[in-house]
Image 1 (tube, rainbow, N blue to C red):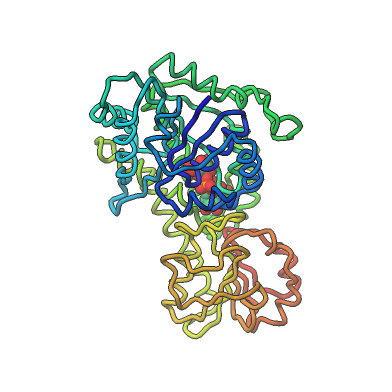
Image 2: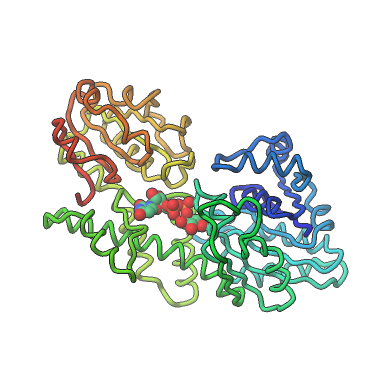
Length: 445
Ligand code: UGA
């Protein structure tokens, strides 16, 4: 099928590349010319395991091309994916300017029946809004259908999540559109494309849920909000553990053995961040408020998460007393491992607070080498973990990068001036560190 993907951000690029790999002719467009030029040269702007290789191969085979002319791309395609951003406004309400602009452009460029598909996380009701804008801007009265088809990709695992999803949600009130969508995703639903054969992640068949567009839009928000709730809940229990002398690792293990609860997404820590959970939980709470059904649980989930970051600072004060003039080595900046994304990263809040209290903060992250926008420029980047920890009074692990578990802690003990470790992810070997002589503080552990 001829597909065009508007927006080559995270979702758009992964979607475009993966659709090409399962056999479609894909044209990806973006208004950012520099990005398109770089993609045309086979350079992948984000790091995702396997993505660059797939990008190159599908470009070479002519299944994947990049361009800047959205109108032309719409004209040439049967299916149009809208993958543009909806960043939050200060109120928490998502900014729909980019979506509206694209809908107007699509309206003006329609030249036959097309399916317009929303892949980005968009506020509830956006499918209907897009339909209205397209209709208002149509030059002729061609037929078209709008489908809500949320993505569930995790950063760092996006290619696998795209090829081996746990479900495909199709939000459409129209049978013809649903049939075409099932054809589009056929190879993924049946798991019979080349990349899947022989891959251990391959599924038997991927479940497809067909529903109305509003329910589909809510499935995406409610899924992210539920996952964020799970983590905030576990973090709250971890805080109780600290008060009563229980161990969160055993508690979550014991809870997770109940199949209704399950063992995944139960890791206590410094809290959730990234480009999705914070934005989506706020947006759902905003919608709930707007429609007269305030979301008390979601508001508490956000509040618990905000407080959780400051628990690290409290723990540092408990260990060091006055923070002024203390040297703190922070390991990890990205919001989670295997990504360079620092959006809403808990590390930034914690480091800024340490600096505000007068500490000297040295930071090391295996991939983040530049200051995230809101990080206080007083933080100093170190070339490696050992340099970050030289003469430090305290080590704080914020992101569970694998290389941190392989550090030589005997060496670290000799180079640090204090022997204090706060493990914000319960990632290090507490017993081994205590044996070496460190004062180890985890989260509820
Ligand atoms: C999340 C969802 O997991 C995806 O399903 C969804 O498609 C995506 O948002 C999106 O809406 O685009 P992502 O933001 O990439 O994916 O990151 P996750 O791996 O889900 O982690 C989110 C945050 O939760 C991270 O800060 C992570 O450190 C934290 N986390 C996760 C915990 O603190 N504990 C856990 O047990 C798991």
